[in-house]
Image (cartoon, rainbow, N blue to C red):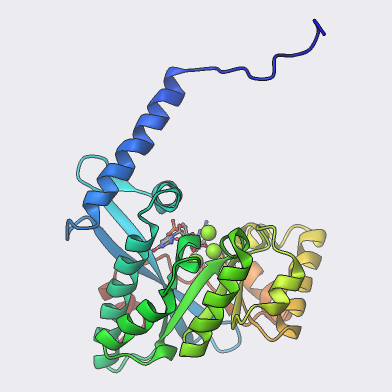
Length: 275
Ligand code: C2E
Ligand code: MG
Ligand code: MG
Ligand code: MG
């Protein structure tokens, strides 16, 4: 058929070339950053109980200060790292740093749970739960001071393997949260089978919540469904009092977002808590 479009049209542009080159360089440089001692650090964002205003926990988020590019956002480098073989080493770094900080806070009498984001690769890794257990032991910490955040899409990459790993982690007594809930393609039957304590509703549903009736109906349903299945619900990306008021009425358990605080370095976090 002479009118048929060609099945492949390859368009090479300098822009794509530059993007590819940047990703390639970032991956190489990140590998060096993991052993650099001064390029990576964690920041912490509080999670606030909607009913009492108390801070019950903090999410640890990775920051990278690249030697020539400066700050590179996790939104850019995490997907690159997760497509490479470096995801496991990255989680190990973050977990170790978060638990070291947690140990310091506990020594000072500051009791809260720290959440760490884990990658799909960790869920299919043999012995991941053992390595989490070993890291807790190394820092002399009880399992309930840690929560792991896993996205729906990470679970869906290898659901059976993921489910087994999550069951092992739950058996340790470490908390589990489903992150970015609503954005993946998980079926509700998986949610129902997950040993998760917490469901974090993705910020894309929370932003502009005060304007749309349909958006509000969706969020209310997500809160009710998750709670009926036995999960505690956290709303991500809470930026206004109006959104917080809506969430309070809807019975949401916890909230996280710029309304309370942006992610902070450990000393600023302790100051925020007036510790
Ligand atoms: P996430 O786990 O869903 O983390 C929440 C993100 O939302 C963080 O972005 C946080 O700074 C941002 N955020 C918090 N409150 C607000 C708000 O009110 N408004 C808006 N617009 N954003 C808010 P961040 O730190 O840039 O991280 C982006 C993503 O990168 C994370 O999403 C997570 O998927 C990934 N990431 C970050 N650190 C790590 C890590 O240590 N390991 C892994 N595997 N992934 C990480
Ligand atoms: Mg998270
Ligand atoms: Mg999230
Ligand atoms: Mg996210």
